[in-house]
Image 1 (cartoon, rainbow, N blue to C red):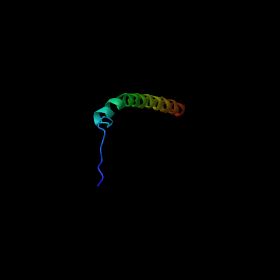
Image 2 (cartoon, one colour):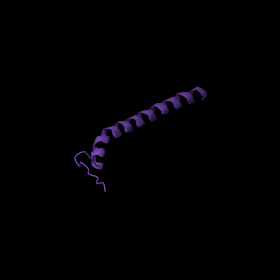
Image 3 (tube, rainbow, N blue to C red):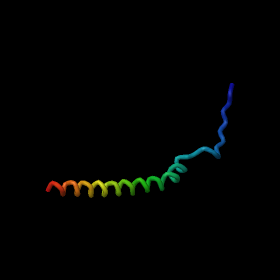
Image 4 (cartoon, helix red, strand yellow):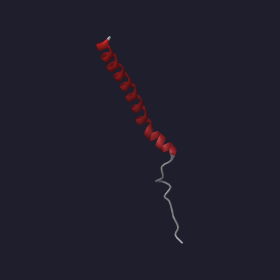
Length: 51
């Protein structure tokens, strides 16, 4: 019968992932806001041509 052992010092917890991914989440939120503003400007310029 085989036994499986884990080195608990190398396991990643949910809290570790949240800490590491927090800056990436913040950057994505900023990029979403910037893309929204860019799309709004593009739509405004496009609609200005026809009105």
